[in-house]
Length: 116
Image 1 (cartoon, helix red, strand yellow):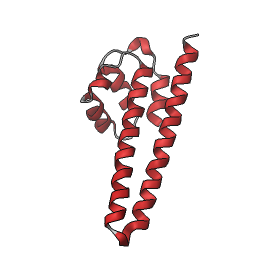
Image 2: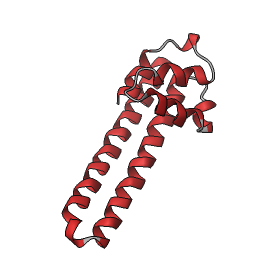
Image 3: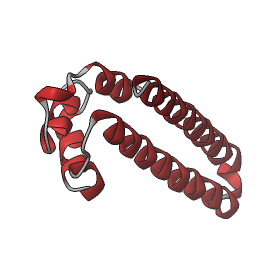
Image 4: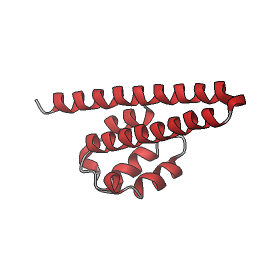
C-alpha cells in the first residue's frame, strides 16, 4: 500500500524508464530490495506511466501472496503439528491478496477519472 501511495504522488513528467522505479523505491522501507526486484522485472522496467507501474507492482504482490499462501497451505498438510500456524499464515496471505486487489481496483478507478 505504501508503494501505491508513493506512485500516485510522483509527477509523471519528471520520470522515464527506470526512473519511475527509482523514485518509488526510495520511499519504501527496503529501497535496495525494491530496486533490485523491479529493475529485473521486464514489465516494471517497460512501464510507460505511474499507473501502469502501480498495476504491475500490485499484480506482482498478488502473485507472491498467492504463491506464499499456497506454500503455507501445502505445508499445513505436511506438518500436522503446525497446521494451525500455517493455516493462519495462509489466511493472512489471502487477506493480503484481497487488499491488493482492492488497491488495484482503486488505482484503475483513479486512472479512469484522470482520463475524463
